[in-house]
Image (cartoon, rainbow, N blue to C red; front, side):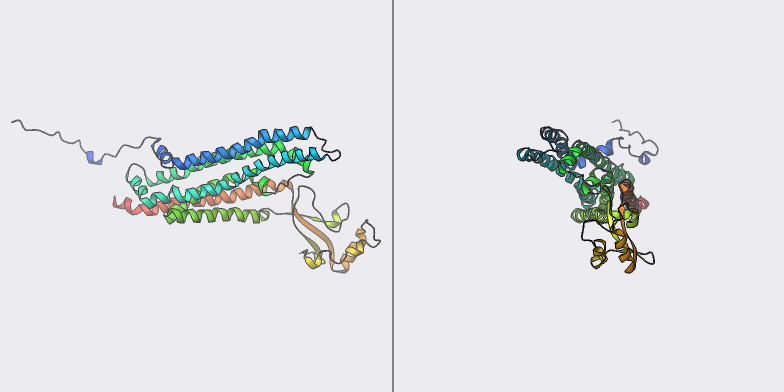
Length: 369
């Protein structure tokens, strides 16, 4: 009987590293793992894009055709006015829905990132399983951060572009019909006509990933992510005015000599008050609404205002002038960039902390290996 011989194993066979994953392997794995979320995001963007496309196309065209058949500056025509306002309301409704879709995008992305990107895999143990294969923890985290950020930013950028097109299509007719133009600091125009939503979305992904790594529980991460991102958006809505220094206009410098230094169209009023004898700016309060001098300005009882008499009365009460602080329209982009920079700074901090957390948790395993 001929003995069976076994060829010797090549030297260091046990030390040979496992074959590296294909270049697109990790990317495909992330997309496959989160395919339902990807399809939901595509559907969300598609519906929102459809609303904005309808506003840009049929709704704006219908408004233009109805307005063309009416004399907007002529005598009142009830039937014509009803048709115009009905078409305008339809256009505005589609724009409003499109804006809400843009506004909610960071909240939805942040909630999903917190609940699903890292928390669920850590909760079920699939993350540790992936780390034992050919995927290093750093590569795994990079894929979790980069791929969702690209997809979310691309969808959001598409919606922002469509909103801008739809708004520009109907803005002039809106002004002609309503006889006033929306203010640039209104939340819909500031948010959807600017760039701040893109940094919000990127920050939502980064913060969501970090929360998942820290909490390792899907529901806890989801709730915390909603609170943090929603709270951040609310904080900027309330405090955005403080991100850039305001300009000040004084009453004596106005051509009309008005007792109240007023803002012009396109200027975002912040506060108003009077200048004391010492040069301090005192904000106007209820008891100082007219500084007790309005009657002095209207001594003759007519409509003409005597600014000299008003300021003389004002000086008797310890004030030398009135003032108003405001943001001109030229502050729009500085405010946009300041807010965007803060969102991006928070996102960068969250990314750095995420890598530190992963490195800290995998260090014992690497030392043991």
